[in-house]
Length: 283
Image: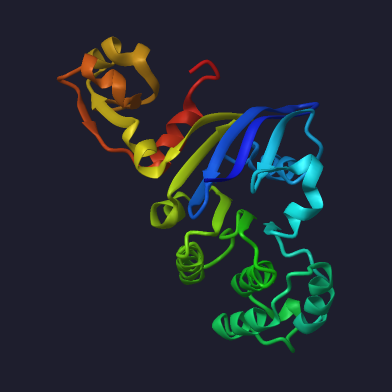
């Protein structure tokens, strides 16, 4: 069952266009939303949530249209954009008392359990928390109203490796019952290797690909060869880099059969993003 369905989402600014973005997320999975800075990740997420108003497209969450059922939907989701947007000099207990007033489904016992799980002290001020602990506090608030879908914009940015690893483990725990899903944007591709089930890749406002992580990686190969080999394969490469030995490049796996002698290897998600960054707009 699709918990999230995005179709043709379009938002135009003077120097940027989110161009008919479409993808779906199934119930009980984690999707990593990737792309370079400025590719349109945050614009997509804000357009989905009606925080900015797209000119075209539709958003369905839990099978309901966001424009028609926004209030009902937002009671069932948790979202976080960048830095935690709370008063930094307030104690956590003061912030929580305000937030929980917005949700009829607030579960105080779950909230208290999560405070213990994340080692959060309600008597501390927000400014006293590390970035990692602020993220955990934001997720605590989201989960304490029994959010069924988490939408997170760059949640691991600025975290040290230990805090990032703990957060990714938490993501996997959160979907174990098969009823909750997570969509999170990131440019830290190692995070996706650890926990994502699906990947959606956006470049300059357009979706390049959306697929399971395994299929996404399977769709590409990194190739290498001499300058002479480059001449024959160049037209089928997404992008390439020359070096002292010849070249390295990225190619769609389906095109590799045309070049049985060419050396190739499995790419990382980083490889795919880097080569696409080098590719022209027509590729």
